Image (cartoon, rainbow, N blue to C red; front, side, top):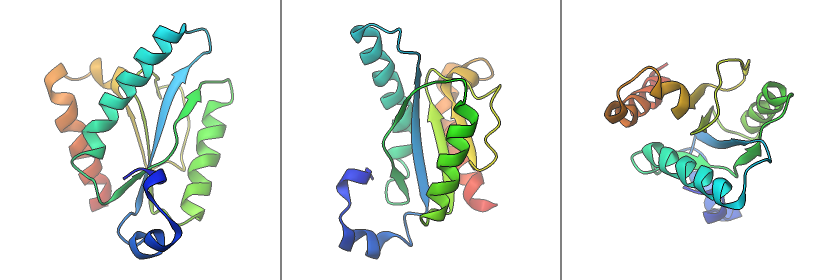
Length: 140
C-alpha cells in the first residue's frame, strides 16, 4: 500500500496491520540525464514490486529518497528511527542501483539492494530471496 492511499481514518484502522515501512532509495547522484533518471526509477519500481505485490496489506511504501550523499548512512538511519517512532515496527530500505555495503544503518531492520544481490545470486532467484528476507524479518 502506498502512503498516498491512506487517509487519517483508514490509518487509524489499519495501523496495527501495516507494521512495516518500505523506503525506496533511488541512489542517484544528480548527474543522470532525464532518460537515465527515468530508467533508474523504473528499475526501482520493478524491484519494489517483489515486495509490494506479494506483501500488500502489511507493508506501507513511503516516498522515495532519490539522491545519494556523503551523509547517506546517517540520513537513512535517522529516517528509520523517525519512522519507527511514528509507529512502524519494521523499516525496510530497498534500492535497485544503490549499494548498502559501505553503509551503517542500524535503525533499519532490512537493507535490500538489487545491485548487491545480483553479485551474489542468480538473476531468477532474487525475487524469491527478497520475499524470504521479508518473511524472516517478521519471524524474528
